[in-house]
Image (cartoon, rainbow, N blue to C red; front, side, top):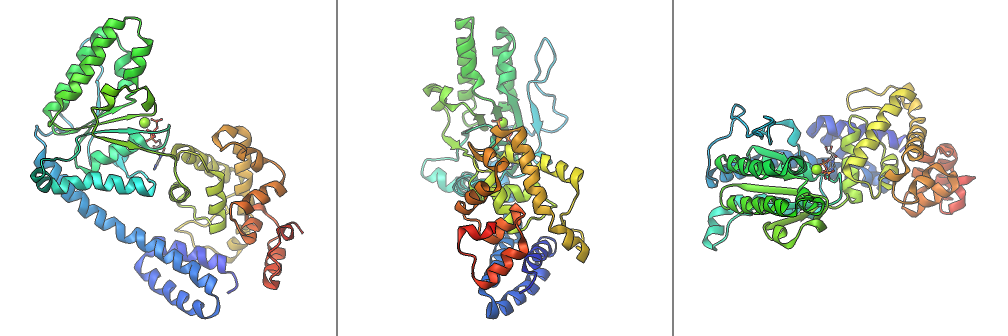
Length: 422
Ligand SMILES: Nc1ncnc2c1ncn2[C@@H]1O[C@H](COP(=O)(O)OP(=O)(O)OP(=O)(O)O)[C@@H](O)[C@H]1O
Ligand SMILES: [Mg+2]
C-alpha cells in the first residue's frame, strides 16, 4: 500500500485518541491488507496489540489500587495524617524535617519499569491483598524496603508511587539534609522524625539513605557520629509493625551489613532496557508521535541512559524543534497534505538535534555513541544497520534519498549494505 508510513502514523494517533472506535476500523484495514501485504498487516497488528495492552491495563490498575489501599489501611495502626497536621521541625531553626506527599498528588505518577521489576513490584503490592493468608503462614507483607541503583533511574519516583498505590501519605525526608546539620541536633531530629512517622499511618521515605554511611566516613567526631547512626538503626527498629519504611540510595555498597539486614525487600533498579526506553521516549515525546524508524533510532541513541537522562534529552530536543521548525503531527492536529510533505524534513531535524546534544554533552551517551552520532554518515549507517534498523529506516533517519531507497526496495535490491549510499 502506498504511503503506508503515513497511514501507520495516523493509525497510532487515532488509537491514542479514540481507542475502541479506531480499533475497529484499523482491524478492518489489517484484515484486508493481510491478503495483499503481510508485512504491513503485521505492523498494524503489532500497533493494535500495543494499544490494546495500554487501554485494558488502566481500569484494572485502578481497581487493584483501591483494594490494595483498603488492605493497607485496615492493617496499619496509627492516626490519620492530614494536610493540616503540623510537621516535625528542627527545634532551633524551625525548618520542617520532612515533607508529606498525599496519595492524590500528581507527583506520584507511575514510573516506567523494566518487565521483571514491574512484576516484582506488583507482587510486593499484591501481598497487601493477602494479609490474612500470609498471617496463617506466620508471615506478613514487607514493611521495610530498600531501593538501590544508579542515579536517575526513578528510585524516588518508585518510592512515591508505592506510597500512592498503598493509598498512604508519603513522609519524605532527605537524609543528606538531616545528617549534615549539627550532630547534637541530628540525633534529636531523627528521634522527632520517627516519633512523627510512628504516630501516623504513613510510608516513611528516607531518600539519599547513603548519607548515613557517608557521614560515618567523613566524621570528625567519631563517637558522636556513631551515636547518630545508632539512633537511626534503633529508630528503624522502632518502626517494627508501625508502618512502612522505604529507603533509597545510589551507593548501596556503602551500606554496612547492620543497615542492609534491616530491610526485608531490596529492590535493584537498573538502567532501562530497549523496551523500557521505547516507553519512556514515547511518554516524554508526547504529544509528538514518531514513526517506528525514528523511534528505533532514538532507542539506539539512548542506550545506557537513565530515565532522567532520556527526559533531559527529549526536553532539550523539543526546544530545538520549536527553534528550528515544528514538522511533527501531534495527537490533536489534522495533518494536511502539505504538512505531510513537510514531514519528510523532520527526521533530518531529529538527527540534527541529536548531533547538537552529542556535541554539547557527549558523556550523556554510551561510550563511542556521541562520536558515531556526530561523525561521518557512513559509520553511523553501519552502526544502525548492526543495531537492526532496516534500510528504509536508515534512509529515513539519516536523510538518505527516500525515493532511491523505495525504488530499490521494489526491485528487491535492498539487501546489500552498500546500496543505501548509492
Ligand atoms: N523509570 C522511570 N520512569 C519514568 N520517569 C523516570 C524514570 N526514571 C527517571 N525518570 C525521570 O527522571 C526524573 C528523576 O527520577 P528520580 O529522581 O526518581 O531518580 P532517582 O533514581 O531517585 O535519582 P537519584 O539517584 O539522583 O536520586 C523523574 O522525575 C522522572 O521524570
Ligand atoms: Mg532520588
